[in-house]
Length: 66
Image 1 (tube, helix red, strand yellow):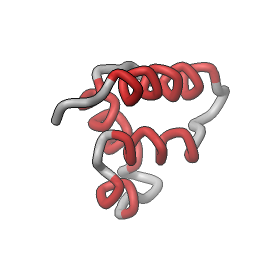
Image 2: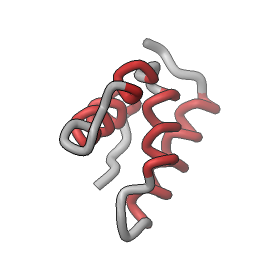
Image 3: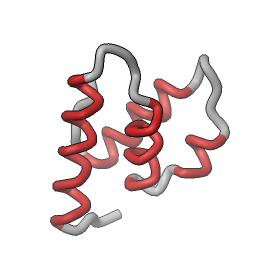
């Protein structure tokens, strides 16, 4: 999947927001997954699986969230 400049910039902003938080920012993670085209995967996560989906979304977008 190819992302626009705006999408890439937004992915960077979201990643920075996630990294700056003391705990996981679930709304930001959800937005990151939506941006990566992984809304369905995010919707099917739970307390044990959300991290792997969030990391996969970050990887697709080329950003780091940790």
